[in-house]
Image (cartoon, rainbow, N blue to C red; front, side):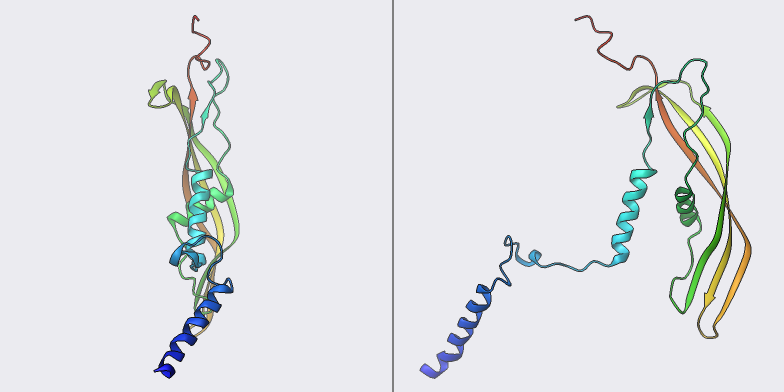
Length: 188
């Protein structure tokens, strides 16, 4: 009977020694969540791109009022990054399997034209107040050379030096209307 308890006792001693080394008790005790879970770089890059687009392009800025008699000109034209992201959403690159099928856009040249710039009449927007919506519409023409490399079953490369895509981008922003200092009109 004494010989059958030796393996159990030996197992308990090994467990106590392993727990005492610090390998399993680092930091707060989170149970199974204490160990790192590997995340694919695809999902990490996808989340970073979503955050980048939300921070840079999906917000509508609220600017000060338009000056009387001054030109109502739109903000900056779309950046090259914004144009390429819009192009990628409209016409995604196909393939992406290295050594089997790859597609590239090389020698990119972007031409931006403003096709409309106008301001709506004032109206009241919820959570903002009285404001005017300023519209700016841009036609962005992207010239590039399309390179496709096929690696199987017979390796070859095709080049289209005269590829052209057109992307339309709208920039909208608000201009406040009226008294911007709410404390100026109070009679306290």
